[in-house]
Image (cartoon, rainbow, N blue to C red; front, side):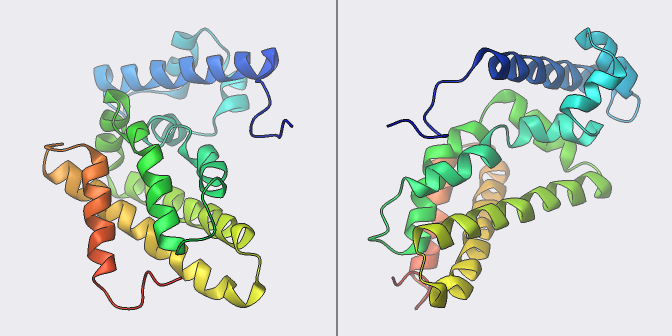
Length: 203
């Protein structure tokens, strides 16, 4: 039986994703060539072969060009990937497995470059932090869906915050080590550290 998550992608959606991908790649290329501040929305639109109005049909700002690379489709993939996990395990372990599946999306050249720019100014860092908060909410809602007992929901929302914090910790260590190991190594390292903290990973 097909679901919204498994149904084939229609032609319109494929075209939309193709255009979005072109805009994001063009914008990042211009940022690297001319600098983030010096690159205008009009320049990105023109180089992408679209109008300024069409640009806003896909993205809301220059920051969104960077976020489209830094996290890619992870915000969209987070919920279905998490819901594919078994509920017969602790929530943080399910989150670990979810992040391990999605980790490679952070490791592309484009993602690394976009992340570097996003960390270059306070304004961009705040925008990146806002995305992480949104992802915390997505993960928390997915946890509450996988474990529908309302009595557990406050704890699950806290678990989502801890899980996303661990992912950020892992990404920071991965960057600091200059990708000496795959991101999955640092994700496992972070969650292993959590397991040594009593009471955080019990079912």
